[in-house]
Image (cartoon, rainbow, N blue to C red; front, side):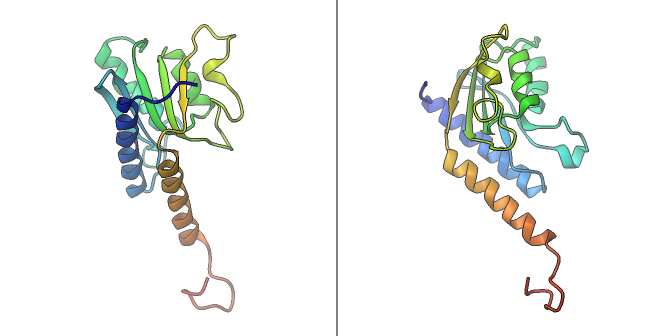
Amino acid sequence: MSQPTPIDITMMQRALDQARAAAVMGEVPIGAVIYRGDEVLAEAHNLRESQRDPTAHAEVLALRIAAPKLTSWRLEDCSIAVTLEPCPMCAGALVNARIARLVYGAPDPKMGCVHTLYELCTDARFNHRLEVIAGVEQDECVRLLQAFFAARRGKDRPAKPGLAEGER
């Protein structure tokens, strides 16, 4: 498996900044950055809740920004850094966009379709495959997701009968 370059690490840090911005908005903290060399073409984070759009994942939104900048849907010489292993929709979109490289942070045991549940980005049956580098800034990506969901569970959990509001 390939190792991340210094640019990949820098771009993952930018993706983490996007994920933090999503968390502030109450969105699941996932961020993505599409880049060519050291040029940033697109930065995005999840907006499913605010846009009420099931396709408003960070990767898809970033693709929608980058393609017009390149005046092509083919992003063959581009890389994407994303904080969480892409789901089937996003992995498929990356293959269809002909992205050259995927750099991701945390594995996704529930929806990950790059390594965990399926291997869509490297499946030899498709007409395009991506170079994949996993685990970049993984600890920070996991920490951000865990903190978000822990806070969310704390807010959504109803008080147990017979306990004061603060004694959950």
